[in-house]
Image (tube, rainbow, N blue to C red; front, side, top):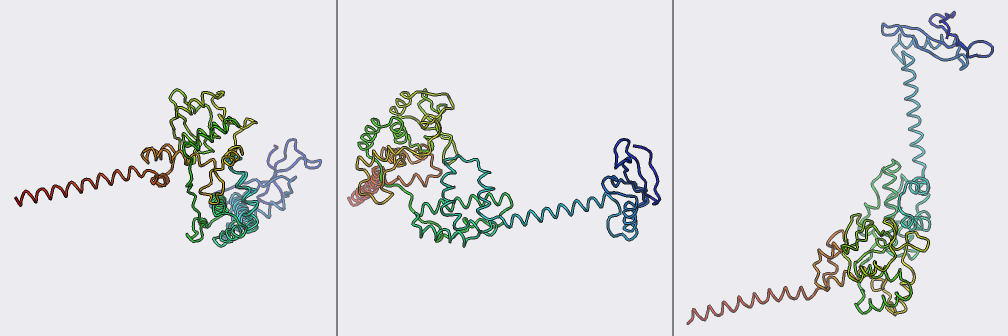
Amino acid sequence: MSRYQSTKFPGVRTREHATRKHGIRPDLYFFIRYQTDGKRKEEGLGWASEGWTAEKAALKLAELKQAAKTGEGAKRLSEKREEKRKTEKEALKKKQEEERKAVTYEQYFNEYYLPGQTKKESTLKPEISLHKNWILPSIGRIPVRDIVELHIKQLSLSMNKGGKSQRTIQYAHASVRMVLEYARKNSYYQRNNPIRSLSKSDKPKFDNKRIRFLTHSEAEELLELLKGKSKDVHDMTLLSLHCGLRAGEIFGLTWQYVDLANRQVTLTETKSGKDRTVPMTGAVAEMFEGREQGSRNELVFPDKKGRQRAAISKTFERTVNAMGLNEGVTDRKNKLVFHSCRHTCASWLVQAGVPLLTVKEILGHSTIILTERYSHLAPDGTRAALQVMEKAIQESRTEKIVQALVNYA
């Protein structure tokens, strides 16, 4: 740049740019000089090509001098810029807040919640289906920030009228709860989660406890039939029957966690989120040895395309039905499904006298309360305990009678 050049306005001066042009003339940069708080200040305003002129610079200088004189407003350009930034920031914040207020539950679910999920496709699929068929038609148009207990009750009523089970309604509640918790973290929802606030009478009521389990002979027949239809289904059924694995744990099992040397399986994708190690029976170890082993990270039971399964093959259900095990059964608690294999394993263990705490560790129950549902299957242990107590009572009585006779004599 060239040297400073004065203008006809006191306190305003310029400098020409060495190469930059504004029209046919060199571009000018405008400066103003003034005194504030006993100190001389000089600040740049901008280029002539940006619209600045000596007259506009003089007006800006007069504005700052007036502010310094009256004590009102910014006395320096830096203060003025800071005020502008603050105003713009507040305006942006207000705009964002207004936009948040207008976001509907459906918009939030589709544009914010789903893109932010890292869940497996098999986990998200039923959640998306519930939203599409029931949740969004009921509460989708309501601003997400306004969702309250009343809307959840309306959702439950709609699903009840639609003939959905209490279990399905509970899944819908859980899905809405997760969406609203996600919205809270991102400042789109400021209320207490209405799902957590529901009274006991407003929560879905159902008994998820399975009652029916396979006898040893039924299990043997089922495995024999499956062996002739599908090796994969046979092997997965055997693993669940003998080790109590959930379907999801079997589907996600990779070869690195199958330890044939120590005859144990380590599970990392569990419902409780905690890893657990389960010992193999001889039949399970033989089953694994008979399968073609892949690399450490390969699935033990992939589907036909090499991907992780999302559900057990229909071969299982067809075989159970062919055996007549579900014939005439209307209560879901008595219906045999693949999960009944895990239930059967727990039942066999308790019947064999295995302590409930050990069964809890094998099954991976989060609390002993879940395992205690099987306590009725160990009547012999209970009876034996009472017999010991009864014997002690009788011996005490006998001792008293003998002592009384001795004293009498």
